[in-house]
Image (cartoon, rainbow, N blue to C red; front, side, top):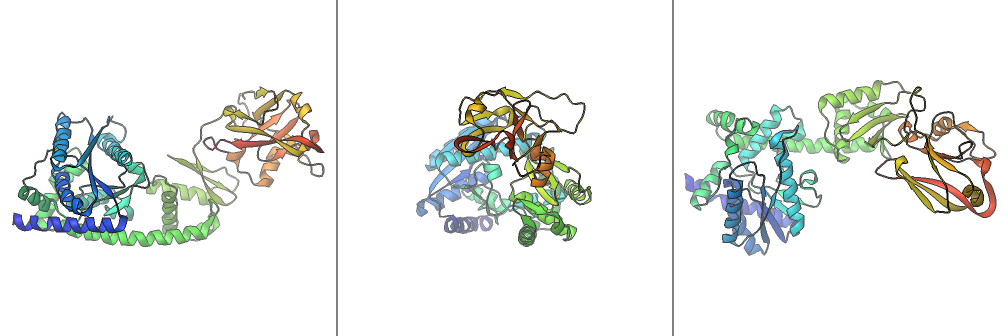
Amino acid sequence: MSQSKAGAVPAICAQALNGLRDTYSPTSMAIACSGGLDSMALLRLCHAWAAPQGIALYAFHVHHGLSPHADAWLAHCAQACAALGIAFDARHVDVLKGKDGVESVARKLRYRALGEMCVAHGVPLLLTAHHLDDQAETVLLQLLRGSGPAGLSGMDAANHAPDLLGDETLVMARPLLPLSRAQLEAYAATEALAWVEDESNSDPRFARNALRHGVMPALAASFPGYQARLARGAAHVQAAQRILDEVAAQDLAACLEGDTVDLARLQAFSRDRVDNLLRHLFASRGLAMPSTAWLGEMVSQLFSAREDAQLKVTHPSCHIRRHRGKLHITPKLPDLAGMRDPDDEGVIVKEGETFLWRGEAALPFPAYGGVLHFDVAASGFDPAWLRSRQLIIDFRKGGERLKPAANRPTRSLKAHYQSLGVPAWERERAPVVSTGADLLFAAGIGMDCRHMVEGQGGLIALRWVADPSQGA
């Protein structure tokens, strides 16, 4: 029985590796080598396959320091690779328990270290030893967590994983995914492979171990071969998810206006299609996928809040806002010096920053989130007059008025911003420049014409450029 289980392993793995070669044409590939049975089997299988292909093979190990045996595991991997003539590298990572727990933190650090080693050695393809039982465990875990189709589709045979590996060009592949743990155990016995045992794999406090040692043996007793059936189910879900992605992309294209989403068009869809579109939008922007409850609350606020409400829903990585019937995704930015709501009374306001212009082409103002440029223009301020004035940069305090041209009325900055369609969150980060008594310039609007001259040449026009990391 052991021989029959083991005999198909090299051919099945070689078929998967041939597919990766034909798809990605790699000149090198690396194995994530923990020293356990699965990765040692993958190491031996890839060594036998890669040499005739002329593909350079590497093995990368991550030392977490969580086990007293971690040094021995690293030494075992290094010795096994040396015996086979496989290039080896390792990284040490410090795993500190955070709110996500040791298991989650270790996983993130492990994959980031593996990605760094791939980049350092110029290896475009990383192979992991995930197998059929791992796929079944993943599907069951995601089902127990209440995941949607994206989670229940399980692991791909190959995919880009920039969030994990830290590089969007790297591909992570799983050539053992069609093989069961029993087949790999039989292969290891036949090849007399040596491997290490991670004692944490028996700790039932970890969800995956609880499934592996408690639930899955019971499933195997009552439903032999359940792993393959779960994998087939995951493949069906993957197909359904691809259709959902296609529909979401079409729906988003119908609602998209620049970087915003038209809420009237979005509201015409069924609630399921709205949620599907928004999840696709988050994924396309590289944002963490929101929970069902969070997404439901966001949609409710987007569609039910008053039209004049300054809606802001906070996501861990961004803000969701509504302005003039459009959904905007804006980055989370630090507060800047003197920022406040001009209509919020009773707030102590920081005075603006006083400066003198000495003829510089530009002056940076980090506290205000950007750079003030002094451009030579045919219409603007007389440079001698500008040099003679003590200038102040500040955020608007409310009540400021600006006249943009002789044939246009003097209006409040709020009225100008409203007529120009500048959203409230951009207004609060738009500084103004004055002499103290007279307003000269407002970012997002322009200069006040009352101190401007024309036709002389060599005049100075003010222009504000926000630091992208600080926002507009």
